[in-house]
Image 1 (cartoon, helix red, strand yellow):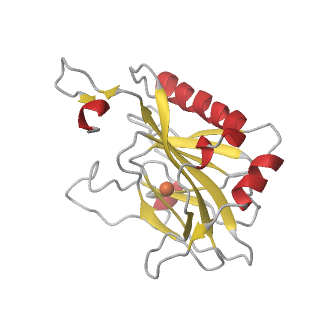
Image 2 (cartoon, rainbow, N blue to C red; image 1 turned 45 degrees about the vertical axis):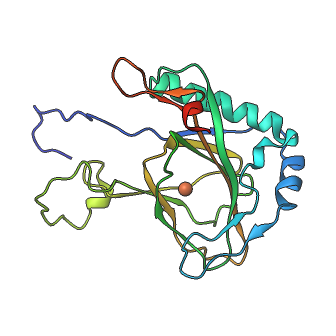
Length: 219
Ligand SMILES: [Fe+2]
């Protein structure tokens, strides 16, 4: 870190990654997840396999899990992001598989606010989730100095952060954050459940000319 003993460095605009654990029994959910049909990976798609059903947690079987996710999303939206909203709702929720050798290229989740991932079948040697600092050229200087070899070990120069989840972790991050999964180097399928959330009814407000009324465009 810095050499000057009389200097301080402040983190100005950190990005939150919310990590918690579902403590209930997942046997029934896992059975239901494992009964789902998957779409085959498209060649060159770079995102592995995704379930045909992309509203997985809308099934009443998942109610306890969905309630838990919603509580976490609300905690994050209100207490971390300070969103002003009436209610949140789930948008899509889907199973995401990586067969051996498959990976998920860096991406963000468009047309939603919050992204969640539930690791209901995570094994210690499964690929981590790789977050990337780069967000479509935002927050970057136009001048690009070369960096010292250890730049990934320092918080202000780090460009990639590997998050290693634990079994039944549920994580939330803003949907614009770029993330991906390195190749699955095990001989088993890496499984997770993705879930997006956004506000119900409206987004933004009339006064600041930022309003979306979802129903207005639903015809
Ligand atoms: Fe994703």
